[in-house]
Length: 282
Image (cartoon, rainbow, N blue to C red):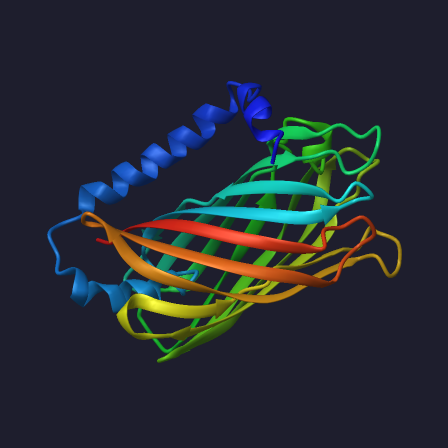
């Protein structure tokens, strides 16, 4: 990652306010509702909520993805996804869960003559409507969007896109399993870059004592504008995580490794994923 220190000094002034402002907003909103609690009694419930993408829990995940082996130069790409999750109670029966992905990308040169890049990628907000009353079977559905906010042509799709998103899961201790999926089409933007993409993320968790858990959550994508046979990226792997505390603040940390059993030409060979998720229970 030798490009990070130099690139970081070049980060534009508009990246810092976006990330810092959202982080401060989420932290302030969550901290205002925190009260004294018994950590031992909360960890199991918090772990269940972190494994439910449409739970009524304010959180701030910071997901670091390191992709290795990109292009002829076998470059490394680091993507920090800042992902504030803010729920709203619509009625006694329904919640609105907002999940926004703000990617900050540092990529080395994938081939001779292709420069390294660093900057903000395209924002991806998603809005799930989900039943408010708890159940062992959980679902949510709503729209997802892509906004062409990338600060470099290599970091943006150049398109405004929209489509449906859905999540379903089943919780039966010690297991949690389900899937999140969405598909987006462009409706405005660069005509030279049509956008027609699918994302599928199956997930499975096996919960262990003392806040530990095992999980697998590969992010499978398909770009239908690629040539035939070059559409899919399919990772396979697993990881481990734990709920712990920084003082009174609960934190969910996890580490996973994924090998791409199917990858497009010049795509990454494998990925290391490290996430720290700050939790703000009511």
